[in-house]
Amino acid sequence: MTDGEADESITRRGFILGSAGAAAAGAAGTAAAQEGGSGGGGGGTKTVKVGPGGNLTFEPSELSIPPGTTVKWVWESNTHNVVPESQPEGSSWQGSKGAPNKTYDSGHTYSHTFDTPGTYEYFCQPHKSAGMTGSITVGSSGGGSSKPAVPSSAKTLGIATSGALVFTLGLAYFFMKFGGDYGEYGEYE
Picture 1 (spheres, helix red, strand yellow):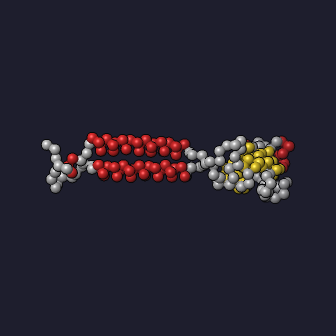
Picture 2 (cartoon, rainbow, N blue to C red):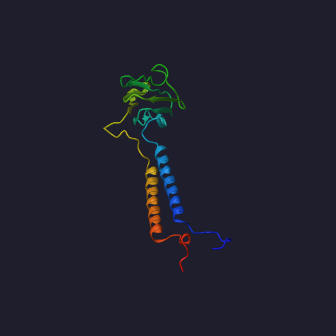
Picture 3 (tube, rainbow, N blue to C red):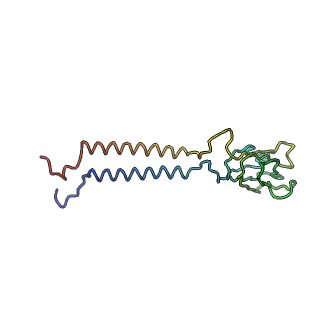
């Protein structure tokens, strides 16, 4: 090769170092995707519609959440409120502000963060007899796993990264065993 020509061959060492760097970057991407998932560790927000479409209901009427989750009630019709009927010992949930007969109209919102595990039952005071009730269960129910859920996108990324790593290592093995940069040790004739 002359001084004017670019060396386009790749050395085994360079190939392996590059492959290892790519594999490390892929693994870091998988870990970041798993960390950033919307798992069940709490801290998120769930929305409950109050009187959607003029109906005398909460939507959803039953909600299961992990501790530390904020529930936001959004009024979609008039003259409703959120009044606690029962709650776990040690919790201090008061419901929507004001006396139990204080109501709010469409556009109003109210939020509360639930930290104490257990079941919270509530109702709309003017419409309780019409069945406008709801419940929130905080914590795992039915012995479910308390581990955070791994988003499917993170699982897909992990599988793709693992496949790329296996392919890269197989290719590195092939080049180390059968191919190579013979220019380092002299040209074969």
